[in-house]
Image 1 (cartoon, helix red, strand yellow):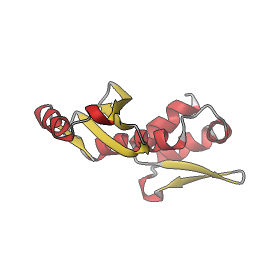
Image 2 (cartoon, rainbow, N blue to C red):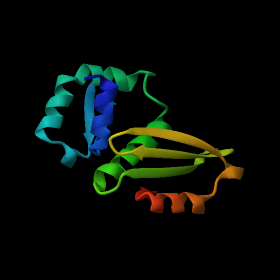
Image 3 (cartoon, helix red, strand yellow):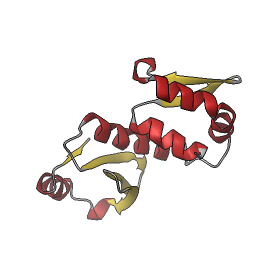
Image 4 (cartoon, rainbow, N blue to C red):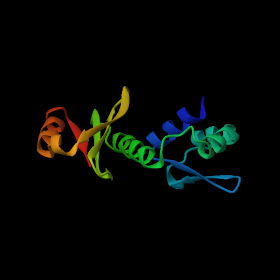
Length: 131
């Protein structure tokens, strides 16, 4: 398993990894299982390299991605999760969208075109959740 795929899998389980010196730190520890501990241990060097490299998305995009994946993990009955970020870009609203078992993407919507009420209506219509 590639490190980026493993990081995504862990994020979907609500686990965030960080590097402190040459050690991996997983948070929250209560979310770790025997299987996730074994995966992390088996891929420790790859995970450290991936977390330290530029191969990962920018930290804000990664945080948005992890938040929508956690939203899906916490609510098994929803199909979509949406997160809006109105502070990341002064000219646009960033919309992070995750579809269970399918994909995750971000949309950059110009502020002049962004309609939060229309977005909420679409989410309700399609049984998602928004933050």
